[in-house]
Every structure is written in C-alpha cells, then in structure tokens.
Image (tube, rainbow, N blue to C red; front, top):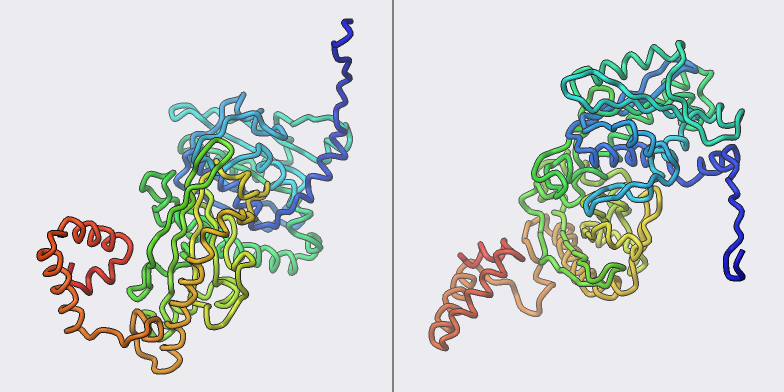
Amino acid sequence: MSANQESTTEITPSARRLTSSLRDIGYDTSSAVADLVDNSVSAGARRVDIEIVHHSVGSYLTIADDGRGMAAEGLDEAMRFGSQRNYGGRDLGKYGLGLKTASLSQCRRLTVITRTSQSRVVLRTRCLDLDHIERTDRWEVLNRLSDHDLAWAGAAADALSRGPGTVVIWDRLDRLMRNSLVNPGAAKRRLRSVASALHSHLGMVFHRFIEGQAEALGGESLTISINGEKVRPWNPFAEDQVKTVRMPVRRFEVEGPAGPAEVTFRPFVLPAKSLFDSLDAFERMSGPRRWNRQQGLYVYRADRLVQGGGWAGMRSIDEHTKLARAAIEFGPELDDLFRVNVAKMRAILPTEVRQMVEPEVGALCKRAQAMYRKDQRTGSSPTVDATETEHAPLTDGGVARLATGLISAALATGRTNDLMAIIDHLRDSDPDLTRALGW
C-alpha cells in the first residue's frame, strides 16, 4: 500500500436501530400523506384516491394513483433509503426519503404495488416491514405478500386493473391509530378525524394543482379523493371573490447554489366580511386556523404549499391585518437557500429575501388595515380606503378627468410611448385601477 493510499472499513448502519429512529423525523399524518401525493404527481398522476378502512387491528390506508407506475429497478430504488434518482426541475420530491420516512412515521408496514404496462396486467410488489427488519437487522424488503394480506391486496389489484399506476398501502397503523387500535369506537372516531384533517390539509397544500394552476401539470388539474369524496381546493387568497385586491407582483433575483434564480412575491388583500359573496364563503376563507392565524406569508415550492400563515418574524399577528395574505414562490433549485426540511413542512425565509420583501409586506398590511377599518366603520365597499392617501379619493368624474389629462399630457409632450408602457404595466399589476381609468 502506498503512503498516501487510504485504508477504509465499510461500517453498515444497524437497520433495526436506524429505521426506528427515522420514524420520528417530524411528520404528522396529513403531512405524511401529502408527501406520498407528491410522488404521485411526479409520476404524472392526474387522479389520487385515498381510502381509509377500519378493520379493527387490521385497519389500513391506501393511496392509489393513475401515474406511470414503476419498473422493477425503479421500484427497488424507491424502497431504498436515500434513493439514487435524478429529480427534475419541477419535481416535488427531493431527498429520496419521503416514501419510506413518511410511511413509517404512521405504520409498521409499507407495501407498494405498481403497474407500468397499459396492455398487460403485470403487478410488481415490494414490502418494507419493520417487524421483519427488527428480526433480521438487515436492509431487506419483501417481494411478495403472505396469504393473510390478500384482503387489501385484492383491493389494490382492483385499483390497478384499468391501467398503469401505483398503490401504496399502510397497515399495522400503530402511530396513525395511536391508542385506539383495540377500541372499535375510538378507532372509528380517530379515522374520521384523520379523513377530515386530510381534506383540509390536502385541499390547501395542493390547491394550485386541483385548480389547474400548477406549472408542472401544464394546465391540467389533479383530482384527489378521500373515501370517495373529492377534496375541495382551499385557495388562501380568495381569488374567486370579485372584491379581492390583487396588489402588484414583485420578482426578485437571488443567488442560488446553481446561479441566479427568481423569487416571486404575490400580495393579496382579501375582502372585508361585508364584501364577500356570501357568509359561507367568508367563513370558509378563515381557514383551518381561523382568520388571525391564517394571515401572512404562504410559501410555495414549485406551486406546492410548504407552509402558510405568519409573518416570518417581520411583524406580529394583528386583528387589523387579518385580511393580508401573500404568496412567496420559488423553485426546487433554491431548497438549500430556504432550508426546506425533509417533510416539506417548513421553510426559513433567507435574510436577503426578507430584506427585499419587507417593504412590500408593509404596503400590503397598510392596505389590509384600510380595508378592515372601512368595513368596521361603515360596512361600505371601497377598494382603497381614504386613509391610504393624504387626499380624498377621486370620484368617478375625477377618474375620467385624470385619464383624459394623462393622455392629453402625453400627446402634448411627445411621451405617448412612455404612457403606453405605463398602461401595459398597470394592466398586469393592477387590473382594477386600469379598468377604473377606462384603459
């Protein structure tokens, strides 16, 4: 051996100890299911069906999609901790851990059944069983199911009878069921609670995909169902409401690990209560955590919501700014900068981004306060409150005079090209103002 040649010893981690530790990586049930929906979307799925079945200690949860499915090598790689696959620029996955760590955070056994052929029904199965790993202390997966698994395996096979796709099954639900496994009444209540929480969480996290707004789907929409009931999208910005104020979008360039990349800030002021289409619409927009705690920043990674609500330390939660919400959007190339965690439940606003968006947050909150105060005072419905300016707001006649005066001034000074550029910008950044000016 030469003097500079390294002498190494490979030390394989204990499968028993490490898999047990990875169960506590930080998922709750809703975020764990969301991580598996990420995989379905990355596999080209347009439909994801979730079933939660109560069967005493044999209760189970299945997630079935109509994506491309996985060939044998791809399936084996998917079952590896830290799978060695290349992620595309819009992939929702990242670390090669999600399928395993998300699943085992909720159950003791993960089974994946997949089909790739449209013409032939060839199913491939792999099973990661913690009880087997504890017995053997080896990094092994099972390639087939035992006879007593045929009840839910048959349901999985039926889901794949129509074409390609993948079914993920969780059973031995020790974490998901908590202490209710042996109490039928408690178990049913627990599973109903899980289903309700999933509707809220998935409708929020994947609302852009369900609405057909996600870039990765190219204008198509994603359908998610839970026990046969479709998940409704929950768009934090009430974009279906006529009186929602869309403030100018800002785009900032930041330096990522691979070079310059873009962060987008998209602010909204939601309508005051009296301006909503209905009381039901107002109540629904209060969100899972209610109005005050839902105000603030909604951080999106490749159109998938990572976290929502709060002001990232820039300001405190305030009743007067509860109508203020803003999207901060970035791509997977900035994961390291935003320090996205494995469970994709948390991102940290980088200092340089915080400095760029802080003035925009101030302007957003000022406008939200004006909307709130006007509703509290009169119940009337202006888009912008008079307190936002030193002068009284223009009447309709004043708006018309302003538009005519600007055009006349541009013609008189030979600056019509500049005025047209301003009008084009306003059409994108503030369509309400553009319409008011008659442009």
